[in-house]
Image (tube, rainbow, N blue to C red):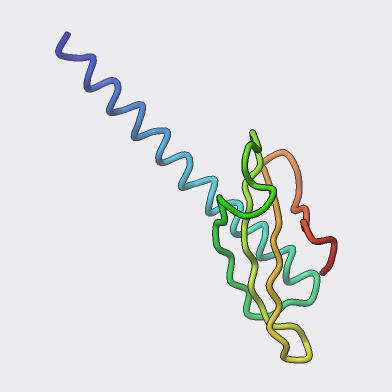
Length: 93
């Protein structure tokens, strides 16, 4: 019985570490996609409560803020997952 709590703690720790790793993989993928679309100085922030983000099984939503070539500040939202690319929700960019 003494080993059961330690197994639960290890499993919880592994789930947490995998989520952190997935976040950094997503962030890198979104930054590359934003740079390919012409955004400079890209900042990617996890947006779990943004429109369309709730009840998504395997996709995560991010808020992308950047500066375009004209110097205008641009804010866009996207979804991504490990199996798909980056989907820009607003259809722009």
